[in-house]
Structure formats: structure tokens, C-alpha cells
Length: 90
Figure 1 (spheres, rainbow, N blue to C red):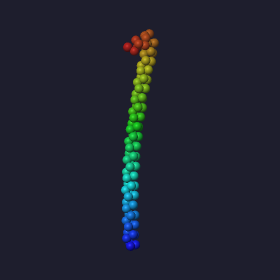
Figure 2 (cartoon, rainbow, N blue to C red; figure 1 turned 90 degrees about the vertical axis):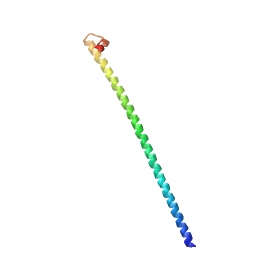
Figure 3 (spheres, one colour; figure 1 turned 180 degrees about the horizontal axis):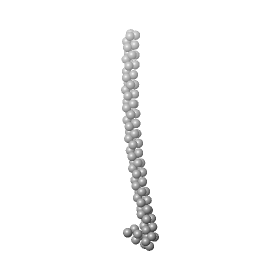
């Protein structure tokens, strides 16, 4: 009788350990999946931010180039006794 109870207890312990092991494995898989999803979201956000900064830099460069063209036309107009519009047409 003792042997049967001892065997049942051992079997119960083995089952609970295997269930715990499966739960741990599932938890580890879920953690890895969540980490991957977080990484993907962060990479996408970084890409969006980088694109926005690039677009802003292009716009600022274009504005600076336009300002430089206007300033050059003003100087040319002053040197040649022309209006800025006339200097820009040259």
C-alpha cells in the first residue's frame, strides 16, 4: 500500500513538474514574441522619425537656397542698377 501511495505521489510530482515546464516554455515564447513586437514597433517609429527629420532638412535647405537666390539677385540688382526682379531674370 505504501508503495502504491509513494508511486502515485511520484507520478503526481512528475506531472506537476512537466506542466510547470510547459508553462515556463509558453511564457518564454510569449516573452520572446512580445520583445520582437516591441522591437518591430521601435524600428518602425525610428524609421518614421528619421524620414520626418529628413523631409524637414530638405525643406529647410530649399528655403535657404531660395533666400540665397533672392539675396544674390538683390546684390546683382544693386550693382547693375536693376530691380531684384530684373536681376533674377538675368
